[in-house]
Image (cartoon, rainbow over all chains, first blue to last red; front, side):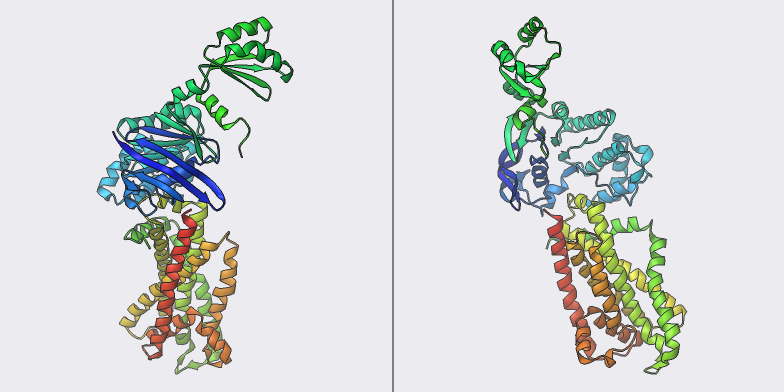
Length: 305
Length: 255
């Protein structure tokens, strides 16, 4: 296992807007690396530079030892992309979509045919091979995008928000397939806004915000460092804040007021809960800390448009 | 310019999708030029008598052939390409494969030229059925070559328009202000020699004028040294339009 992708001071500007602001990271061969962040954080822009469809403004970026560049066909040849938007060819059937895409990778027909059969089975779309794209559900379209991305047996798979808009069944199916691919040795890059998705799939993540990397690490470790183990949520008016913080802060490693809720982050929620029973506060919950808490703490709880 | 044999892959993609539309496009690409042949050729032609010793239709047909190529390849690379680029987002998935943006755009230009060729061939078959025949078999083959050449030219010009177009409506400027006037000022329907000198000069700046001149020469087998000039004008324009079209489309596709 070595470094597969390496970025140094990677920057992307669109006119006056700096979408990616001098970030550096290394992705190891065979790992699943996640880019997390709210809308406009620069995740998609970053992965688009990795799979060579968007030129860098400055900095360096290498993939498999080669400089990433929009004219680098060798990187594209070994990369499979599951795009955020559904870019299937609506003029063609399911099978035609795949056979034409295989052609773009110079895969000979006699190799492509069995490969397509295998992939349609892999994403459970065998029965739909003759269907037109607009006859498919969103979940089926996304599964077809997964199959399409795997035609060239990619060493690198880039999944840009692969489960957006899917029902739980379809989402879990795609997660399973992605885990399977990883276990077969592919390097996987994932961007997502779903923290559960990152926890399910990623070995390492970075949290991005406004074009910068805020934190990097293992999901569980980030939760431990930033939040603790448990979160206590109290739905209560602001009037009580001063008293509650005075009483409860000694048991917590941090607290935060957002809208109608007062949050306490702690290693162990028992002491706080015991206190709260004394105070007789009904609208109170304790739950394990999640990556979502880390994410919200770092990127802020306000809406990001 | 990062061009490769993968242009052909893009062409094949278009061929696959064309299967579904083939009948309707045959009809559409036939109707307009057929309309010109009937109204101008038979209706008006009856009053025109002979042109240079031949019936008017012999004058009209070569021009209509190249204009139908112009129409089809123009529309394919305006509307067809715009739909693929903006609505279907096909270019987005293409450029993520070893197919480069240049390959993708050139593949669509080749496709536009092919659509022009289909229209031109259909028109030629119709006019042959009406008894208007090119002078020889080699002249038929040369006309086919000319159609491809003219198709690439107008497909490339249309690509330049598409590369800057915010929406479908924008195409009206090009079709109404450039393509339609060209149809009437390029000597397709009548000779240009009765035009005042300035209009003749303007006509020299219209690529269709040169294409019509060559087409008429090839059709009748009556060559003249000045056709070398017509060809050179078209050739230079074609190379320039192709280069600009591909470059500007790439600029729009790659951000």
